[in-house]
Image (tube, rainbow, N blue to C red; front, side, top):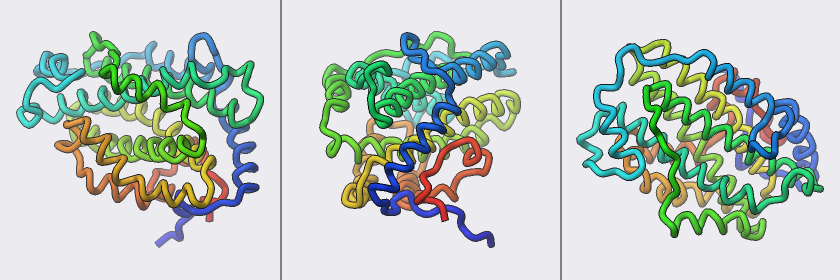
Length: 297
């Protein structure tokens, strides 16, 4: 059995270690993303990669049996979710997960300094991070289009939820950092389970299966780096609080997406979050992403 290469994401780190890792992450993210396109909420390398997918579209050989079921339920669940097939549930659930991300970054984009007014490495990292998240929404949209769903609209949440997401980035750092980290960890957990579900549901559509996994990998590589980056904001007390927050945060968030409880074992997802280390990830994701030095053996 191979010795583990990585420590728990909840491994304590000194302030100096975290300072050094911010500098290292900033170098990584510039190389990984290319120039920030502020007006377009985009990044040069991300745009080029996305265009390569758009220029070489792949579609289902056998169209979805009931696309109307998706359109009827993707914004708000109208039917009993237990009556829907797993393909429809995967797609409606994926939209709902991505919509939460989209709503969150909309509010944050206007709340944090733009690049011209970002004077610290942390501020610059945060600005690029948000641009990456906008790229993720485009990739999710392309995943839906690959399944023949080209009439999707990205609509706001309820006014109360919109207001919560709008105010969240304005919280002081000591309140913001731990939930922001747990949210990124939840994303990686969800994407890993979604990746396996794609393998199961698209066994008869190998080209689409491959394309969906390629699109999801682009998101996951960033999200893995975001887990390390967001963890880097947190001191020794905060990281203990973060581990405690995994269960209530995962439970609350996934309860809001009924598809998740039908498709996945939420208890296992919580366990995955609480025990997360980078050894759980495939090598090709690790090679393209970023991991804090204090999480390496």
